Image (cartoon, rainbow over all chains, first blue to last red; front, side, top):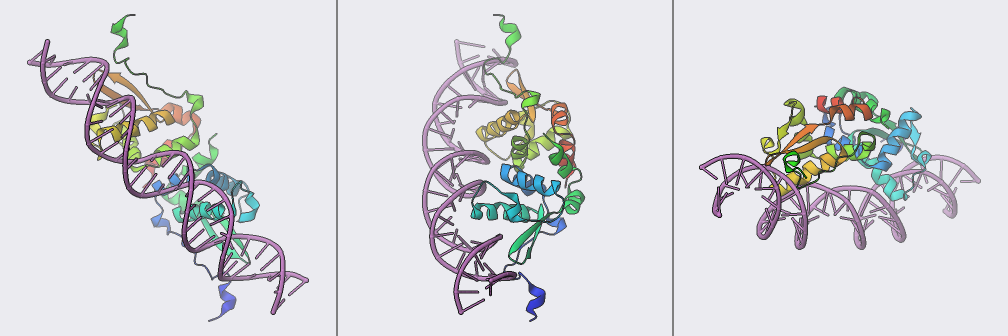
Length: 109
Length: 109
DNA sequence: ATCGTAGTACGGCGGCTATCGTACGAGGGT
DNA sequence: ACCCTCGTACGATAGCCGCCGTACTACGAT
């Protein structure tokens, strides 16, 4: 197997398909202050960001936990780049499934 | 004190002012299946509804709990009418504080 | 090969929360 | 007066969730 095309394949990151994204898990995911902060930061710097760039006030393991919740809810997409894990908002998918939701949340207070 | 104007005044229901409504509690409140169902029902039959009309798959006390969470988050307004407690969506207040949020949530899947 | 950096896995802990049952209060009808 | 209905208060319980530390893996650089 060509390892070259499998960079960062040691760990499989599960992402729900667009059709599998559900409202309730998305709301749960966004109802946490830290995860909301992650999403806001991602939206502001709209582009891919490494996890370290967030400077969250929690430990590494807790950070991992929050990113996983966001990913499994379908809010963000993650992939490996070298030793870093990059994150990107799934804006199109969210817009397709829940039109206006992300904009409303980002726009609020 | 004129009791006539104080029907159902035995219990004071606390409602946050419009400015006190915050995004995070609102999202938490809506992240629960039963409370989401309540909000959807309220929106559908848009008008005031008594609690019994919801036919929720939980006990009375749990029902009381969910309505309180919604009320304290600022999602619904409640008042007494005889022995019933009426509920109404705070659509205008929500729209003022988080434009588009309620519509997006009601419109989703 | 060794080390450092970035992140994951696992186990544990404390607190929040959804749930219930029971007991009680407030109104309306008979 | 009595009771029935609708809802609240309170206490208990069980499960989830956010948080941490530690041990481990993956990748890149030296």
